[in-house]
Length: 176
Image 1: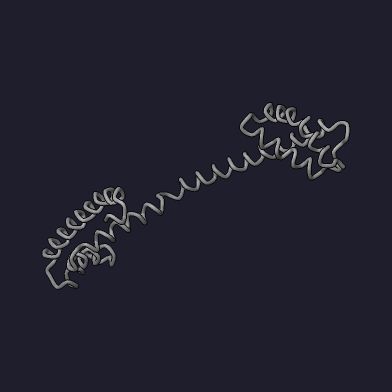
Image 2: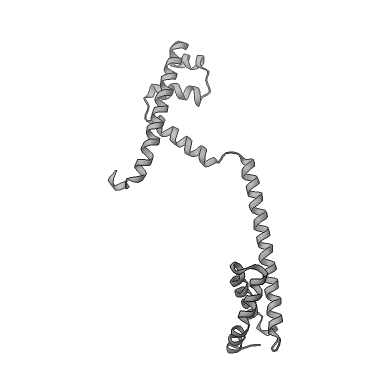
């Protein structure tokens, strides 16, 4: 088994050649990783290291390390592809829906109670205009007018919030 000084000497002697091998196999961007992993294996297996012919043994380890790196890259690429396919099949991003819902709720909170009621009867409770008109106690045509006006006010409130949001992001919270 090599002692610390002998291992350091072996490292200094063979590191440039292991690095050159690694560069030739996987390029400069991964070569340092291959060298580090190779000498880490060599350190753990100091007792198995041949005293005279360490370079072929080290290059064999570097070969195995490189092969494992490529396997890892292939696994990552396959996983990335599977995730891309899954995301494409999943449809729209849930976060977009949550953000849109939050914006609608903020805008809805700024409306009057009668506007909220006519909008939620139709949109959330799923009532027809005739059914919602009975709940509110008005004619169907009156309900249509109220619903139309409430939708316009909701749209205006959402536009106001959307134009105010970028300005608020630029102003520090303590100044608001």
